[in-house]
Length: 99
Image (spheres, one colour):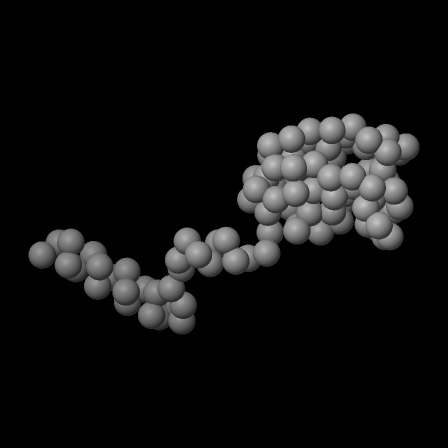
């Protein structure tokens, strides 16, 4: 009976809020899951473009998505390199993009 009431309570709470949370919703938010480190600056669950500090950029990618390194600020133009999930690299670059 307690388990049944707990399920009803959860159903009522999610119905009152207008939406139910599912694990699939977390994956569909459009952000990488994990940490991206660009020139020593850590970003949790990153999404978008991040500036790099100079001629060489150091990227440590502890996310579930590929990070792309651009030679120009603002992630403009064609990317010159990438860092796969779980990887790290130092390369020429002025900005890093991750989706």
